[in-house]
Length: 395
Ligand code: FEO
Image (tube, rainbow, N blue to C red; front, top):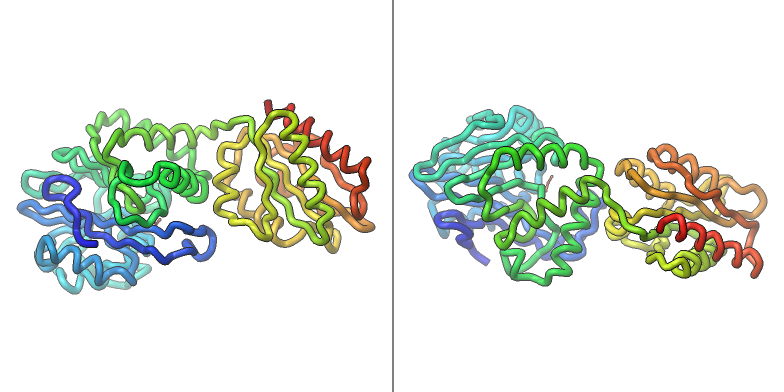
């Protein structure tokens, strides 16, 4: 794969990471790999917008070299400090030491705390711009989408928005444009990305979308820093972000449980049958085995969550405890929630789940259900009815 012209004199010069399966440490599983997108703009002055993760820096430089000599780069725009976009800076800056690095004040601070280099840095804020020749780069600060340093870069002459992490997907592909790939995979990854990275930031995102809409920018291409570039009806991803940011939900349930000897699992399965009997779609995950990233994506628009655990040492099991800690960070709103689980002598898991749910800012909407040891037929029927009641609440 080489450089690709995405607009006149604007080139994708990033890298495709087909192999990565764990992102952000292990908080995000990238089953379809990812890309690190850098964009080169060739005009009287030459600018590079974002770099790539350090292991791909050489590849990025090779791609740049197919268009221009990297030594001729005048500006390196750093929309975001995180290393998947700034990791290529040290190697690149050795080739163009006189280039200015451009970003927000927080970006400068953050880059210094990563690389300890005194690059010539130009601090910009919303409304500032740089004239390249026929083309201009305008900057829009976007703090907490998704780091304090984050920024969007906009080229009005090409109607091109480069919003860094916003509107991306972790999806490796030999294609570069969103309309060229399988649409199910594309939207699945866009949703997974929003749910796992941006869910807690909905209020900030809504405000930023309103602010950018008021700017009346003409946008014909949205080129994010991960995944495919939106060129056909690019505003569709913005509209979808606006809906996700409002935490709009539908009548659907996600059951997430962990089980020691399968008694809690029996309960989960019967509860799911009850929810389904009420006409509500339901997904069931054993969190000790499931892909956490997918579970979070399924939870994004589901109105109902049920969390289950066997009791172990008076507490819930560790995988569900860790998962609930993660959910707490997402601050889900407008949800109906309850708990269930089996115990041996002293129950405790269900109570712990209830507390975790409250800490996550949610209310328990249906009294939890717990049974001693293995549920019998009568107790399983209670599970079914519990599920059906929960399903009716969701409708
Ligand atoms: Fe916030 Fe893709 O890094």
